[in-house]
Amino acid sequence: GENVEQHPSTLSVQEGDSAVIKCTYSDSASNYFPWYKQELGKGPQLIIDIRSNVGEKKDQRIAVTLNKTAKHFSLHITETQPEDSAVYFCAASRGRDYKLSFGAGTTVTVRA
Amino acid sequence: DAEITQSPRHKITETGRQVTLACHQTWNHNNMFWYRQDLGHGLRLIHYSYGVHDTNKGEVSDGYSVSRSNTEDLPLTLESAASSQTSVYFCASQDLSSGELFFGEGSRLTVL
Image (cartoon, rainbow over all chains, first blue to last red; front, side, top):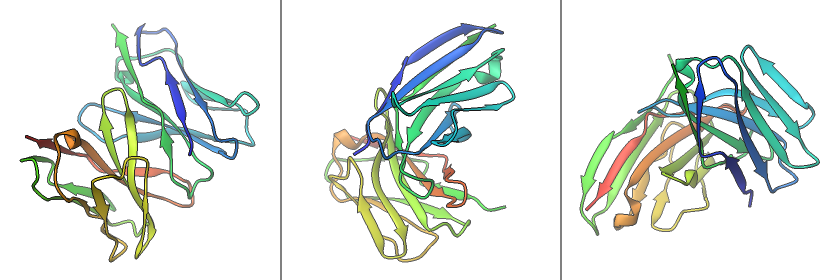
């Protein structure tokens, strides 16, 4: 099955700086790569996703990049704010109607 | 508004007891999933269903079962609870047009 590895496990950044989280996957048939954000005491929520026919996608302060050859994808958060503090999960699947495999998560702390 | 609800939100039980966690969604989604969240392991898939009367094992299915008698509900049963099953459990349903998973608020289970 799919194996998704995520690094780092924790990340502390100064407010206003950028944060980068990296993931690798093992299944070459995977073509859908979403990112979820989990705030304390809540379930994860989708923040952005990318499909294999796209190399980069942006949505305001967040962006994702995908390198299918190397089987890795990354989340970039620019101009971090206190509300960006959360646990972030990357995931991969063979399609948007297929089960997702998640990484172990990254706890991001934004220091004021 | 459509939603996904889990119950109970918190439960303490004893080793060997049977426990059922309920999950109910009102989106009419065919795909539903159960994950467990443990520190250092992220979200691991327990069981999933692609429609009524369909159930499939995930990566950590031992000791768990599910049934899907209607579209709205996917209850998760621990036949004989073990201390290793102490965890936070998340149910999710999937929008097939986008691939997005909608998670419940989680059920925290403690097995003593």
